[in-house]
Amino acid sequence: MRKLILAFLVGCCLFQAWPVFASESQQWKVGDGGTITSIVVSADGARIGVGSASAQASVFDAKGDPIFQVTARNIVTGVDLLEDGTFLVSSDDRHLYAYGSDGHLIWQEDMKLRVKDISASADGAVAALILQGSTELVYINPANGKTISSTEIGVTLKTVEVSANGEWTAVGASDQYVYMLNRSGKILYKTAISGPIQALAVSDQGETVVGSIGGNITVYDSSGNSMSSFAVKDNPTSFTGSANGEYIGVSDLSGSIYVFSRSGVKLWETNVGTIVRQVAFDPESKMLYSGTDTGIVTEYDVSATLQNAKRQASLTMIAWISGIALLVIGLAWLFMMMKKRNKLSLLRSIWKARSIYIALVPGFGLLIVFLYVPAFSGLFHSLYDWHPGGRTTFVGLDNFRRIFQDPYVTRGIDNLVLLIVTGLIKTLVPPLITAELIYHLRGKRMQYGFRTIFVSTMILPGVALMLIWQNMYDPNMGLINEFLQTVGLGSWAHAWLGDPKTAIWAIIFIGFPFVGILQLLVLYAGLLTIPEELTESAKIDGAGLFRIIRSIHLPLLSGQFKFLIILGLIGIIQDFGSILIVTGGGPMGSTYVPALQMYYAATQFNDLGYASALGVSMFVVILIITIINMRLFKTSNV
Picture 1 (cartoon, rainbow, N blue to C red):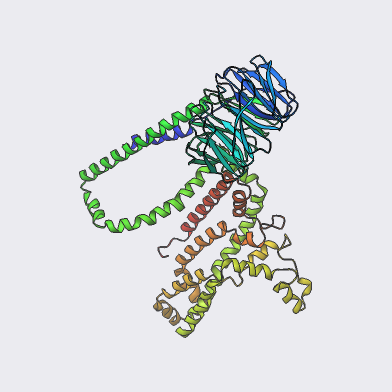
Picture 2: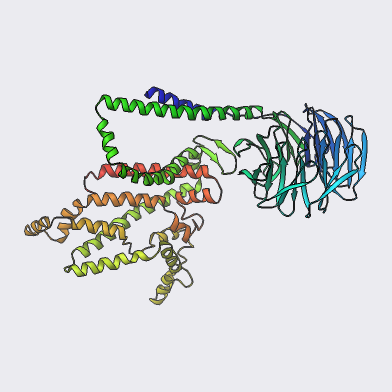
């Protein structure tokens, strides 16, 4: 049974580690290298049409060899290829053009306004365009370029996309709505988008992909209901869908190209180092074409990626079924073994106390969800170059090697050692002295009164304490410098937090006289548990107060010391809040600690892989120090 479970786990690991590749087959430059404004692939995949900002429109064969190239009088805003070989071109020169399969001009039509976008069905039965500043969607006849009809939308239109079968036409408008029209031009519905529309695409099934500013992408069904949402690194520039609607190609301003499943799972990503303006699938969804702002068209073979996605979906289902089967078999095997060894009484005991175990389930569930899952997630992602919403790449131990090369971390380690030494002294010595003083007060009421006075300081929030001390250190009106001026030591006045030589020490002295309430109560409670007979016997033998403390109190408080040292170490290594509030790591990085670098890596630089590696490293250090501390203080008392 153990071997079977082990084999299953190994198989799952191998399944997760299965590589996914998309090869760059070829690339070519279009015309003078102007920004690619549009890409379209013919229904048979034999031709690729490309429009550019250099007023050129080109048609290439599947190998990237040019078939013909035409020139407009201004930026080419859109192109489309029909089944009969007709090449439609729209331009900012206010004209529409149609070219035959050999590049000869069939017709041109003056639209009186700049043509901002054009899209047509594969058979040419539906061809729609948008004119600059117009609120109408115009339908034309691809045979002669004449206007057939128009549909009033009511707001300025930005982009249009007609499905390959012509059944659906999606229009993005300036009012942040997507309007869906049928073949006859009737508006079926409109859907609100969360921001200005950057790009859209529509499939033969009527499913629409819409991207808005901020990299947010949403997939809608044929009724306008949201199906899935996901994000890319930057504003999307173009979408393309596979013929069956299962996969979505995306490009964005960061230079990244993606392939997502319809449910929003990222299957593949690459970055070309420059802005990608257009993407288009071939009819079989094996090839993905991209166009950049440098006039480069690149062909990617993504067939392996998509096949792998199908394989992973099947294997995931198999893994779930196998896991459930193994769980059932394991439970049956456990039951048989317990029955064989007469251990069924344990199950009976658990059943009798079932209400208690049921009551524990929510607590354990919250621990697992909010503590253990994030902890294991951090361990896992420490091995990856992980930027949420972007590309995730396995890098092994590179993040950990980077820690030793990070000047902020190395400087922070020096500060951390100093903080640990001084922090442990502050954790143990002042609270111990205070606890001893309260313990040796004669009256119980006086002891209670002083305990109350110290404990009442807990009502002051930690953030407020940091801000109070920050104001006390103020070089102009701070209490410390004012006091020095008053007592005639004005020459000692200093910008305590602004000087790299004194900033870390100023942070260390925050909280003076360092009487931690938790530490005080733990040590005071420990003193109360010491039998009075030991103290009385020592006094009879002539022992003084300091001898009693050294020979009786300190040894019997070793359990409390161990507890406070462990908590103190964990708190000091993990804490960065005080430094973040008071100095932010400055001046000149003189107050940096590793935990602060972890915080900045996660929140300011979105480098969660490196932040996870820092967190794992701190955990290992805490674990090692805790084990050493447990070895040194061997006691059964806590």
